[in-house]
Figure (cartoon, rainbow, N blue to C red):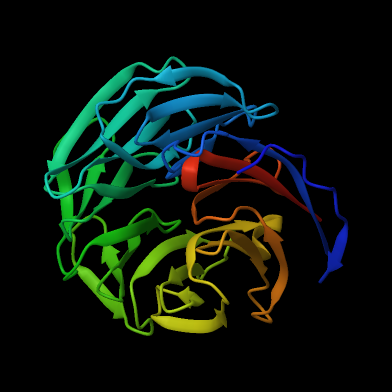
Length: 320
């Protein structure tokens, strides 16, 4: 990616104005892909994960502040606990092992390292009260841990291929996972029992995103290699609607107080989806390569950081 500034745009659609910001980037073409990104709880720093390790960048300039030590060969997810005091670093070595490192924030001190999977851990998520967390692995298993314990309290074992994503629902007792077996599954996090299976996707399901403040029936979005983003009410097993995407969506997240969904795609474009009309509200050119990871600034609902090929890290803004 190059270092030129993107021109500022004001675009009106469905009550939202969208504008792209200046790029924040690693300019070396041989830099490893950025496969995980997360804003710090204060929003002034961005944590970046790749095969080069984990670094902390200044959110305004992109300058590296410091590194966080990790033993992981590949980093696939970075996730803060609800109180912002712990960051989970997930990844591992393909075909060999998967691990999650729980690191104190902001000190960067390792709190504990849990290596219980036979393949890489792709994603982790915390219950809203911070009492437990769940890990999704390429070994086809999800594991649930009580905070402070290194022994699984439950295991989800019904997927037949790698589990690529997992999200805890607001009740903390239910989770949704997504897999290369083309399904989503809904789980009881205390017993590990599979509550239901959602079958509508026809290819790998890459990503999940829980809609903020979804009400009594939580809404979860899923992104798949079948070129769709689907919206579900998983607690009743209902697919609400779906949007067709021109390029395979690889990563998704909610913006504008949960009224819009951003999809980062294989063609390097970020597409803003209206979940009600299932129309693409706007498309932003972010990169010439794939977009792998995304996070929304907790202090500014419209600011999104995206990670992609060859060290790409860029912020874009969605103004409401």
